[in-house]
Length: 393
Image (cartoon, rainbow, N blue to C red):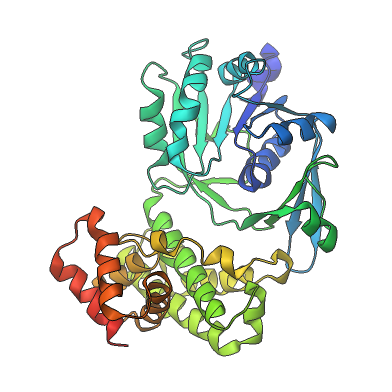
């Protein structure tokens, strides 16, 4: 692909939609390393657009390793606001020319807000080969975006991703206190991402010709999606719940409580890990005793990295959603039970979360959980089983 671009003097274009730390720390960074001729961003925050323009398209990202934070700079970023009538034509052109696109929005619910201008651009070059990486936290994000865009773009491929990279936004005051770089000298925030950068993506024809670096193709993402949700995410919130009970402010403070760290490690390896390895045996080396233990040990360290200064209240926010029937708390407990193991430590975390969300009265907790789970239509018997286990502790 690179040789063809040189031969025919074509320009390579990357388009990022959304301008949070996932976009900058994964996709813009990867696009810069992939030597795209143009890097374009669509962002609705007018102040961020202005800050990037005032810095002449140069941005900075803080990258936390195990020992230190380093700064990575990206130059030549063009940024346009789809809500600004003066910018929309530029975004149509960027969408038409883009070879690779990454969506990094708060939710798949926002796809309806980008589909019209994105499709308008695509219609300028309907047969152009383009790959779209969907990084929203939904296992079917690619399918949802493809349906929202509609038909007529035969060489446009929407791909799912599994992103196990921790990141966050740091306000201007926080950047000053912690010695972090702001996105630009004119921005009111900085982006802090961890060094880990193995991002998994699904496949499509000629995927090996992609330019964005740091992306790893898996023919079947489902096992890894479950490892992320029912492993990584489950233990992250379990650690957060223990930290919340102890009155801790930062996740790194858990390192001063070795018994809690060991509980999380045991839950990760012996409850989540054994269950996932049994369910997905043979899918990948991750789903072996040694592979999952290495994965768990690495993540426990990364989740409590002092250089990330990850706040406990961020991890424990929106507990109602996280207590959902298929989400990281209850969904993981159900997986462990289905695979024939005892989710003892996970149940303790679930009880903390349920009492935080619904209070300590057993009837209120049961009613709250049943209302929460109703949209997934489990049977009364299934719900009663989980509630009974929670209330038996």
